[in-house]
Image 1 (cartoon, rainbow, N blue to C red):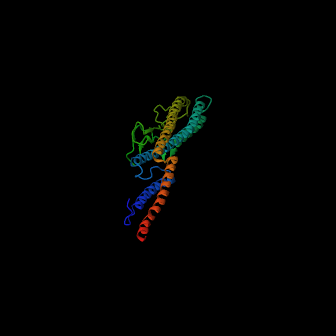
Image 2 (tube, helix red, strand yellow):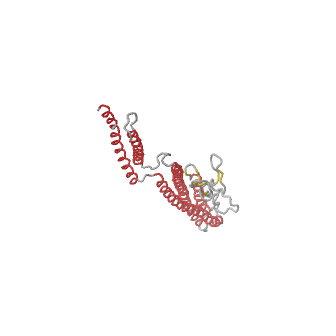
Image 3 (cartoon, rainbow, N blue to C red):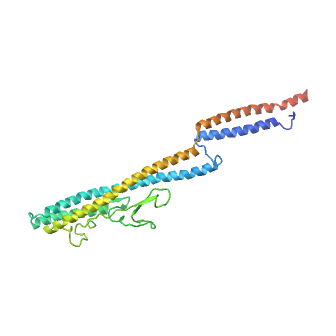
Length: 298
């Protein structure tokens, strides 16, 4: 290479190499400080797109887990109320048994029947008052076999959405809870039973007829509780599956997005050495034109 004074080609070459090494050092510093291999689209455009889709999926899965847990809380609320109703039904069966024997007078049966009616009213009150986040659970609001979510307030059975899509076979299912008021169970004065069974125990015959109706009411209540229990078990299994799915997806996202510290630290040291070498050589290259001055002045 000729010794010239208009262009310091060695310095230009060293400066270019310094710029490249310094740029690589800057990237390694950013990756090590952020913990991300893909920090910008320039790092890995395809990887960035895949990562963002995965992040959206993971976030949706975590919300699905929360949705399922909320549904479990709702079911437990309904089951707790039915447990209290169970106690009232047992007491009503006891009262009907008491009134069915001939050792009580008509006045005494009326007194027994007053407690019987009070128990029926309390069952209705519990069923009408039991709600979760403003959703009434036992008054028949969720007893419909159909669901309509087009209005501001959904109508019919409750939809529990936990999946990341909108496929009925894998992303949601429905919770249907039958009405548990006294009239729906065929008990008390509000009962729709035409033969008066279960309406009252004011006479010996009515008390004897009420015992059979009370058995049917207890069975109906137990069916509701069994449905709630099976749905709760199903939701718990769903949560387990969603948790495993989210964990595996998070691991896949990490492999794309997160930096391998050991590998990147090796690259950082390499770029650091190259930068230091380039700085030293640039200093040497900048001093070379002085040789031309020596020739001119000599």
